[in-house]
Length: 296
Image (cartoon, rainbow, N blue to C red; front, side):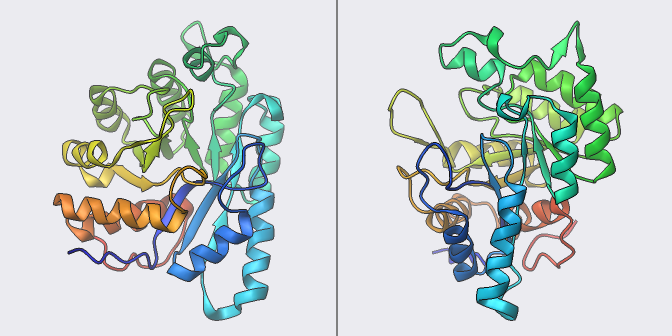
């Protein structure tokens, strides 16, 4: 039986309190959990906009409580929802100057999200007009490039994503993540994901479970994720949890179950470590050696 280790792993998608929806851990509790299992880094995310400021507070807490006993780092980012003015270059610039590592396109303010939730998509944020990204998004691309940050597609449609990703690549954005493409709200086909990898060299973020909506039980994505990894190749897939829901196991259990499942499915441990260490290390600018991971 696999005994995968969480030492040195990164998870670039976890939700925490404070939030308008109750989460399993607050920022400091998640930091404690990460230190306990020896994780290297976590990126916290909120639909309410900024998490980079909260991550900085969590890191001060970790330093005070644990000192040199850990190298764990918490990172944050900016979600471009209406709560921060949508595609707001000024807000993005401030977040990046504070140390934001990930800039997400709209989530709950995305036209696709609203449509799938039975709401009016016209009330969402328009990213593409006449086949081109809006000027504000072009400005954001320049900021992301200058700060060597990550652009993540969040809850936009595949159709929007293809236009945005192509424009981002032309603008010089090097780090692009397709956010949980398996989620039914986003709705990327396997062909969409293969094409994005082939044409734009993106990273596909595949998550532990997905919200099925309307009070339904979360759907475990593990088998579908394993099949996708075999179809696309582990070098273009990042293993994240999108954790933090009170309905699901705690974060450290989720990430362990996910990694263990992949190994039991037949994906070599060194490839699992590549997807949980090498890829996020590069995206976050972590210089550590990804111990146990497959070599390039």
